[in-house]
Structures are given as structure tokens and as C-alpha cells.
Length: 162
Image 1: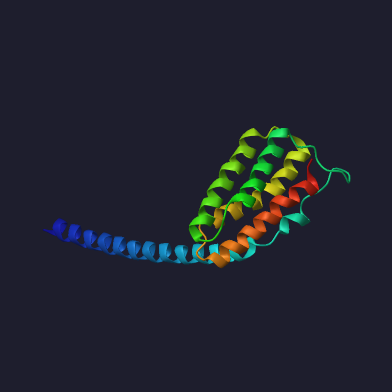
Image 2: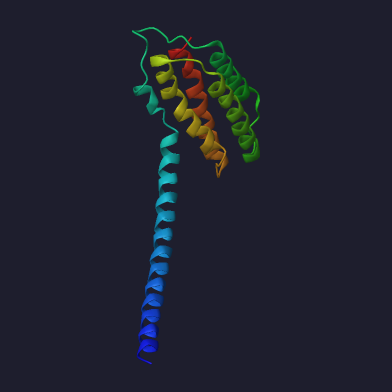
């Protein structure tokens, strides 16, 4: 009988502990979700800027030599920006999808090495983030701002690479 009582007490303690753990986990998930959503909102507001321009460097005052495929991919992005109509959110989503395809072409076919490659990443990583945020834009106003920032990013490529 003594063992049965001890077993029930242990089960009750474990059950209470699991309940508290589940409540703690639920609160933790809710807090993580709030922090994540807050972080996304902050990123979205910062993504419009082109802060990367303060990080990128020239090759002793000259442009970096890029491989032909990278240059071709950037030209594809310029063409996509120019030709895709953007009158609705769906149009912006289609633009983001096409830009993602064009960007993937650059990534897949890049053969650059060393400092030129490092500086390409300084240019490319913020562009990738902008394309991702464009694909999730919630308003035409935000999408238009992102498109403008993406256009500036893509057009600046020729300031640093040839």
C-alpha cells in the first residue's frame, strides 16, 4: 500500500511538472513568435535601404572583373524589372519569382574567386533579401518601395563590376 501511495505521489508530481513544462513551452513559443514577427517588421523597414554600398569595395579604384554568366544574370534581372508590369500584388509576386530565377542563375554560374567574389556577395546578399521580402509584400505601397530598392541595387552592379 505504501508503494501505491508513493507511486501516485510521484505520478502527480511528474504530471504537474509536465503541465508546467507544457505551459512554459507554450509561453516560450508565443514569445518567440512575437520576437520573430517583430524582427521581420524591422527587417522589412531596413531592407529598403542600400547600406551595402558602404561595405562594398572597388579593386584598387577599378571595377571587379566578373565572369560572363554573372554579367548575363544581372542583365536578365534588369530585363525582368523593366518588362514585368506591376499593377497588383500578384504582379509583384511574379516579378519576385522571376528575379529569384535570375538570381539563381547568377549563383549557379558564378565562377568568381577571392576578393571579387567576396564583393559580389556584399552586393548580392541584400538583393536576395529584398527579393524574398518582395515575394511576401502585404501592400502595393511596400512592394513598390521594394521594387525601387531592388532596381537601385541591380543598377549599382555596374558601378562595381564589369
